[in-house]
Length: 249
Image (cartoon, rainbow, N blue to C red; front, side):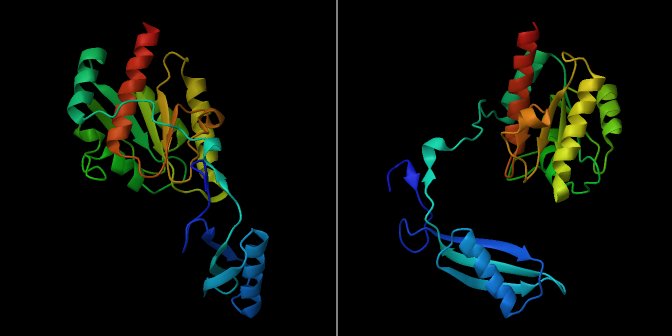
């Protein structure tokens, strides 16, 4: 393997060994296991070994399959969103906000639609924070309004207007039938209708199933994926809002 071309690793370098999991809508029996191996073969795993099968109710079976793939990964063709702003400590964030904005930076956060999973938004906003970092409530120069779960988009827009929000943070964990994408598009459209472009707050979404490259498609300013820390979000807010103010000036 060259530095720019790699294969999955299992037992030996470049052996292509890969483990996948999936659910089929059939009861668990020998035929179901054969169907799982057939699917794995069509996906390119050869030979494929069934390492786990478990009934999921009366008519569904969960499988884990292990096998070798021939596919290569071309690293020079990988496209990702690189962090384009410096990571700042809490004191640095507070200093920049105080000196450049000369007021509190206002953040409104929520889980929208029917999403009731507040773990993500709370990890970023609540003072307890995440991964050893304090949440945005800890930052002296930030004013945080956490609306919690199942917030309707019109309510979020009106609260952002009432609070004169600089940024709106939305967490979406529920992804069935692409609910997170539909909700985000509805939210971004509502803010663009309700605010002139120069007055619209930053729109930021986060969750484990978002594609960080889809900001344009979803109509938001930034997407954060799994493992994002409060410090990253705070640093981005400072970077984006100070830059926005400099452009407006």
